[in-house]
Length: 133
Image 1: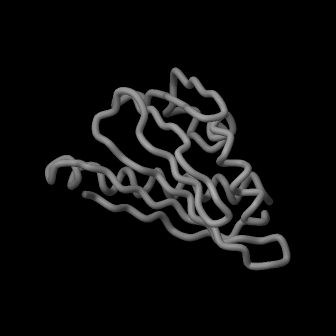
Image 2: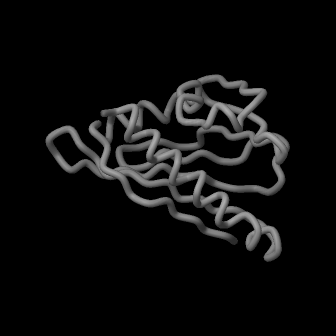
Image 3: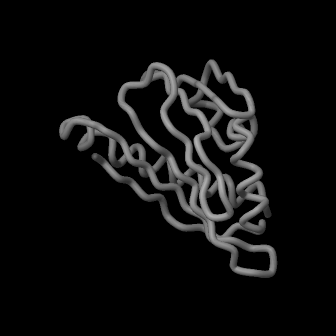
């Protein structure tokens, strides 16, 4: 199992607001790098997209509570994974937020994918912070 954790950012939203954002996977497209993503399809509970030159990814919302939204691989994916958005209220309408990924990759794929995935998850939390400023 490969585990990757993004950096933690402080977002100008409550944990409840962040949970509500990630509970509707239609909104996830706002965080994606438009120059790298194609074939985006989504509903409130599922999404799928292609990363140019790489793979098609599908996810569905499995669980959401006050401190975490959990997305799991859905449909045809290169490997099974979970993606958790973890947030904690700081009070005064701000929250700390980070993304934690767990994927069942072989050692070679894990070694090749770890840095690009870390960069991608850091970009997601940076974008979440930016759209809430």
